Every structure is written in C-alpha cells, then in structure tokens.
Length: 379
Image (tube, rainbow, N blue to C red):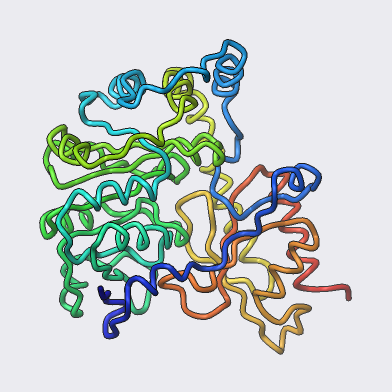
C-alpha cells in the first residue's frame, strides 16, 4: 500500500500514517486532579460543560439508567438531531469519536485513493489507511489553505475521494463552500469534519448540501462543542440512502448509554449556551491572536476557530530568553501551562510550530503573561 505525500514523493501509507506526532502531555486521572495546570492543548468549548448536560448525567447515575444497555440505533438521539436540523432521522448515524466515524465511512467504499487535507488531525490518515485506502496528502506547497481540487490535480495529485475539515485543525481555517462543491463534483465521496464548527467565527455548516450531493458525509461531535472531551459522542449527517449504505458496515457497539442520555438533551436546552459561546469567541479569538502576535518571536496564523496556530522563531538581534519552540513549550509546562507542539504532524515541516487553544479571558491572560515572561526573560 502506498500514498502520495506532498506533490512529488511517495511513501508507505502504513508506516507514514502510524508514526503519530508528539501528543499533548497526558497523565493518569488521579495525578491530573492533584495538579493545577491550565490546558491550552485542546479545543474544548471555553464555557465548560453545559449545566443541563451535567444534570442529565448525574440523574442517569442516580436513577440507575446506566445499568441498561444503550439503544444501538440511537432512536432518541437521532430524533432530537432531526428536530434540530430539520432533516429526517434517517439522515443520521451516531457513534463515538470523529476518527472512528471517518473510518466507518471509509470502510463502506471500495479501496481507492483518498485525499486527506493536510495539515490536519493525523488520526484521519490512519483511519483512512486502516479502511484499506491509499492516502493522498492534500497540501498546498506555500500556504496552509486547503487547495482547490482542480489546483491539486494540476500539480499532480490523483485521488478518487476526500476527507476535509471545516474548520481545519491546527490551521484554524474554515472551508469555503465553493471549494467543497468543487470536491463534491470531482470525487465519488467526500467526508467533512465539522466537529468544531460551533467554535468558529461565524462558520457556515455544509449540512444544507446533503440533499443535493449524496456523496457528501458530514461529521459532527458533541465532545468539543460542549466541553466533554472525556465522552466521545459523534454522528454522521448525509442523505438517508448514503447513511443506509454506511450502516450496513457500521459497528455500533461502541455507542454508550451516556450518549443516549446526553443526546436526549443535546439541542433542546443548549441554544442559549451556543449563542453565548459564539458571542464570547467573536471577541476572544481576534483578541487572542492580537495579543499572541505582540510577543517577541511569536508569529501567528489567521484563526477562524477557538485555537491559534503559532510559530516561534528565535532571532539573535532580539536577544530572547528561549532558543526554540521545544524549549518554549517545556518552560510553559514547568510554569503550569500546556500547549500543543505540532512537530511531526503531517503537513508541518520543522519544529517551530505550536497550537494554543482559546480559554476564558482570565486563563488567556495568565498564559500570555507567562509567555511574555518566558520569552523576554528577566531584564
């Protein structure tokens, strides 16, 4: 099995996809509860888990609801989603993590060459490869913007399907509708990860396109949108015929009772919560970009979601107190802050890049203060 990476080189997709980049520092639960780290390495909603969700989970524990096997067809969850989005319940397929849903979609189709947006979550490439496909890395040679399908093919990329993201992690860029439509016209099937769409600057969902394009499968998630990274709950949205096809090969045994409990409340009681999230991020994302860019040595990339991709370049004339990104990230950890270093991520060349999540204003100010102190040093 082989894969096309970049525009000119080929390598083993199995070896390339399974060499995962360095992951954020993670410790056993009992140790993390004893520490006071502020975690900026994730993408969870900065407002925290909605109280309605917490009450629903508490009630489920107290009333013994978790002693029952979950409904593997997720009838209640699908009915709630159908009311929210105004489409048929048969347009939904509920599961666990986003990468698991990508794999479930990919295994439905005959092996082919699948273009995967890059840079993006490396788990996407692994999911596609494990479903038996060849991976084609969709990366622009000079920018971090998703290349248009025609431009990609003019540069020598050949692929039959695609996995995109709206927004893309870690570049924090939204997917233009016209770019997606061009992929849909050119590919046999296209997956779009919209798990972070609620955490953007006015991001536009592509769900209205599912009736027009039966080859479009959108994946959404509750985990980041509602600050529940420890409870993976995701779902696919597509034309009912497409969902029925995917369901023939879908293993739904991973769906938990928590998903059923939370799913029953998910959009009935969360409208005001999501509105407050958008209002907060509309000011906090631009403010965070501006403040990060004012720190010597740090370059930011335009962000349209609740995380900012950055690069640290040591410049001798500036006489900075740290020499590179690895030292900067380590010093931040010692000061009690976790950010995600992007070294080794597909589509990221060099060790200077890292990603910072957007949290509350109070937490963001603490991180910025620590960054300035570390980078500038005592003078």
